[in-house]
Image 1 (cartoon, helix red, strand yellow):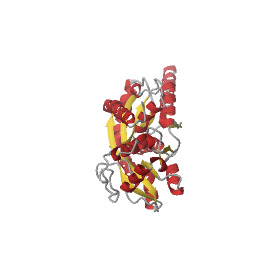
Image 2 (cartoon, rainbow, N blue to C red; image 1 turned 135 degrees about the vertical axis):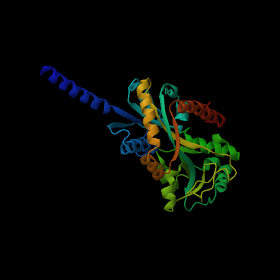
Image 3 (cartoon, rainbow, N blue to C red; image 1 turned 90 degrees about the vertical axis):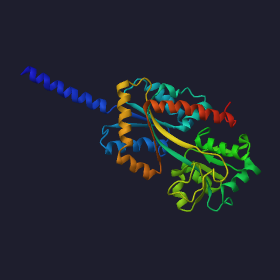
Image 4 (cartoon, rainbow, N blue to C red; image 1 turned 180 degrees about the vertical axis):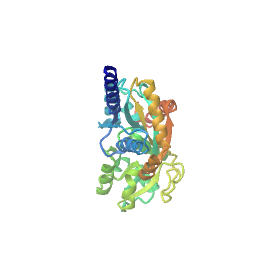
Length: 318
């Protein structure tokens, strides 16, 4: 009887421990609520739940600022060795680390999965005199400082795309009047109220306002025109050799146990193949850009080198 009672007690304790472990999943979203990283993290786990891949509790933490480096710095320090601690990040972070002289070291994290890519568009107010990308570039050439352009963090993908456009057009990058915004919504407001001559951001940030006739999209940074956006010319079509995407992915904590790392790589691989995630991609206008585990780690290394070279060549970093 005592043995039976002991076994039951152990079973209950095991269940409680498993439940506690299940509830310890934490996800750092190094941005304010409502942005691209916030949406990526929350919707990925919602889709994972719908697909039955992971149905436990997830604790999300938002800590924005400095291109994600504030949140990731906290994550690097406080979540070291945690078995189920994850963070969302992306291409913006790479340049922000350099420009902010951040202590974040991406090579120390466990690379879990690259998930999405979103191409960038440059937009102006609907009644702007700039009808084409060429028109806007002509204004940049005439007086770069007079053409205020809003976008994401300094040194982020939006800023880099504008710098590449300027380089391709022969406009001195240091003379650009680039004004970082807190989010895509702020950029749209600036375009509409006239404080910004143009804005540059991911297509999902601007598409709704373009459809409502409040802004006009002049170009997109894809290699070819996107399906469903056939009326938006590419930067390359307009004569500017610019192709760049804002990718987003998932990192595991520094020193995450290998078994947990493999488990999360597997979970995100299954997520990528799920109908629930495909529906999210379609709804958000994100392109699938999946790459798992160690391959993603090698990509981060090469992308860090590429983006930092662009920043230096464009005169944005020393």
